[in-house]
Image (cartoon, rainbow, N blue to C red):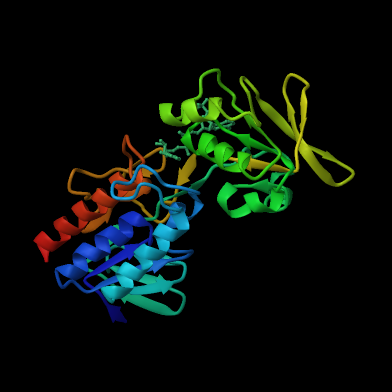
Length: 292
Ligand code: NAP
């Protein structure tokens, strides 16, 4: 059994912010991460709303966060959590068991998909969940982005610099993205916004993905379909109070389970931004420091 004061699940910006403050307070901390440090940050092409950076790439900021926790000697294990025993306060990861006094869910959220026929088959081969990761594969091609929030608009803008044409298909009539992004997208000549476009199926012919079909009978041809239709919280391992899957916390970041905290995009909140996630991580750290 390996003993820690605090175990943080998730090395996104909230988990990392929490770990930095805990380590500075001398608290033995472990971060468990099943993917890359930085989480959703890695999918942001450019970040322009994080104070202190006029403009910075998502992966670049992720690498800096990693370097920062390495400088603080935070233990970081890359693996999946298979089980949490909330009564005994033990987490099982592969063959290893870790005990904790405090547990922090900083597990973030994952991309929602349309859940249409053929989606699973073509994911990663013509359907993408990340423009920053896959955009370069579609240089000079026509592509589709689906969604109407800030993610979809940012992805369309990013792709417009690489691709020949970008169709942004939005099911509503008024994009819900931030105003600054809406103003920016209106000025880009190779982006066509299709309003009230409901995707009814993927357009597959002769075992080839050609684009999408809309419910009004229109077909839109493209080499790749980028989905940016929101997220699902990674809260399956959490057994306490949730709202639509998002973990409920109080202002100290405490959940309904004793000594279990949550921060970042996995919690039920109004604003899902880097800076809010980071500050929530710090609030959780401060709650733990007070109790340690
Ligand atoms: P979001 O704001 O929840 O937007 C999701 C979009 O997908 C909505 O337009 C929604 O349509 C659409 N959608 C959902 N399910 C759909 C379906 N089944 N079929 C078709 N369309 C569907 O998610 P987000 O854009 O990822 O943004 C999440 C948060 O991150 C927001 O707080 C946002 O401000 C923030 N963010 C900020 C930036 C930035 O540059 N500042 C960039 C990315 C994200 P409806 O509008 O009709 O519901």
